[in-house]
Length: 577
DNA sequence: CGTGGCTGCCC
DNA sequence: ATTCTGC
DNA sequence: GCAGAATGGGCAGCCACG
Image 1 (cartoon, rainbow, N blue to C red):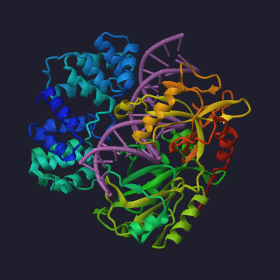
Image 2: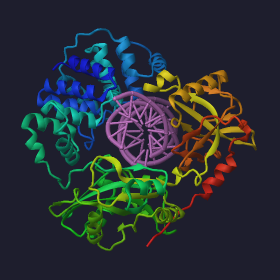
Image 3: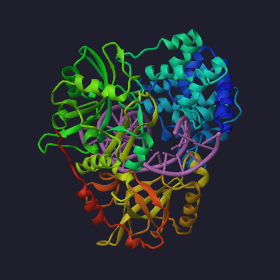
Image 4: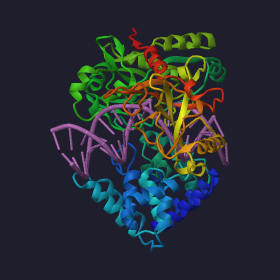
């Protein structure tokens, strides 16, 4: 199939918000493709060229796609950037300025060219990549260029994600969605949407039924939903297992004899980064073959406590692994078992997986299984939660005792309850709006995408940045907000504002919003509490809680001093036996 | 060889 | 990560 | 309730450039 025809399908998909229509359109598309084309189109729909767990990335985002468009259109980069800020979508920009074009390239030709761009590395590669993308644009119509731009940017914005494509595979194969469970299961086990599509349309449904858990191949991870209280958790799922939630990174560990692999939440192969976990898995997983999941955190031997996420995350690296490992050894809190010695454990009830996991993990100092309780009493759950946050943990995860491991799903089989969800327990802060950024995509029509906000520093009578905030307001509120801010818009940074970041629009410090956050972190970019050459402070996961506090003047906002106090109040994680 | 811009991936 | 929105 | 698309802080890696 020609890429132009695919672009026509994309255009139709973009025009509807109805899921059923999308599924029907996609199914029609898949029926018109060869199995190989289905495979490639599946990846393109994921804004990729290979499955998630393969390390081939475009390595180009808005700056470089803008640069390519500048080359293709013989315009200045600044001009393209200015247009982008107005339009909010480089794809739409491409479509507007690139002409009709012949539309003669095959999907597979385009795919191959994208692959060439993605695999260009080394000295001079930025120039080469942008040249090659510009060259590709020269063979495309505006419409095709729109979708190519968006694929490279990772913002296809068609309203189709993996689940929609899985439905569409079913619909194309059988005329309804009845095969989704079989197809989805195959996807969950192999994590390769292209392979699933290729297999279905070349070998048939039975070939997908034959897919099995393979040690060494990542399984799509189950995720947790959220609820704000113990009571709601119990009334939702009743009797449940409750365990602490640690603030590290998710690891899926595959053991096949001495061969260990470690996958991240997004199924990246991170094995090389964690020699200590690999060693721990060899020693402490008491089975020849097994797949376990857990949360890895760096441990402070000296203080006998866990490091905060900001420190733990430094272990995610390619170089100087041994050096950093010496200071930041990892511990793994194992919490689930997916496979052991020939048996797929994912369909088994949680309670059974956990019991087996406990017996599987041998004593040692790297891998452990955290204490958990089973309860149907909200008070007891709450006590466990209070205890957890008292020890400086993020919160708890409650799990349905009888639920299977639902790979790839985010549902109420697992429910997280975090410190920050409980209004009374975490402080919110009152921040002064200092400016705003124009949005991208769906936010463009609102004319505003996020806020730059700060705290007050009475010592110098200045406002210092502490967060950008892009969630918490409804579309209606965003529009209202923009209206308010445009009235106090100024051309340059007000003299009382201290900021490294440059919003698209500066405003007079006037409006105060109530902002919730999970934590305060040290920040290289925010100026609150920042001394010369030192780090400032910032909010982790900031979101607007209350639209505008008309009762507050900017000088009544939270102060730098208060932020510092809140930072110092944050408890360190104590060691647990 | 150091720095800064940009990107991808953790949360 | 959190949050909002259309179905 | 699901699925998707907006948005956040901040780390390391890669590349360009002085």
